[in-house]
Amino acid sequence: MSTTPVTAPSPLPTASSSSFPPPILSLSKSTIRRIRPADAAALVKTANNPAVARSLRSTFPSPYTPADAEKWIAHCTAAPLPGYSFAICDAATDELIGGLSLRALTVDEAKTWEMGYYLAEPYWGRGIVSEAAAAFARWAFARWGEEELVRLEAGVYSSNPGSAKVLEKAGFVFEGRRRRAVVKRGEVLDVLMYGLTREDVKGET
Image (tube, rainbow, N blue to C red; front, side):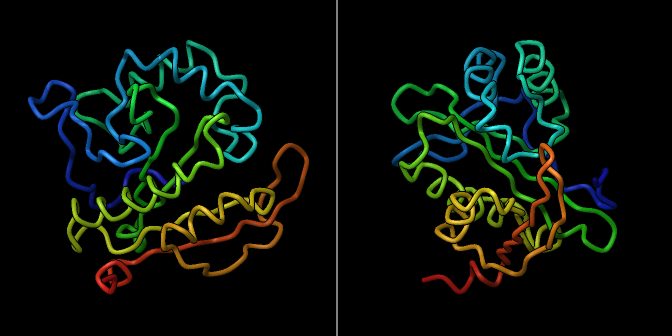
């Protein structure tokens, strides 16, 4: 697991900033915004589901308790904000229904950032994450310059073909398979690696 990058990306507004917490993206199927303390109950409802947790790293708590939600929200709303984690919200109600995150890698890979996401099970199959991931990735390239961000990548467990389709619809390119790379709940799985570069985005019409 990576730690703080050699050159930390420029910070986003803190929770006390006048620019917090308007959405960063308002899409047809969802809104992407900073997570808030009021999201705690919705976060537990979304995350406390083995079907969600099985496709995420085991550092994601399961079961997911109110204490887990409070701890995560405190981390995400600290000043200065330590990471880049966002809520995916229902476009009509603004209720949290998932999450998106960015994590910078380290040393020679410091300009490569990992993108992750999850969505509440009742919202699967509606194209919400495909739309959100595509817009979020392009927002990231617009928000941070080439001196900080050159490439986004995401790894998908071979047990989760739906997530691979999400990335393909979002414009990510399949780059290879890390064979038998992880053990999840006793099952040895491959990791499918996807990438999206700044040049890929520049080439879009």
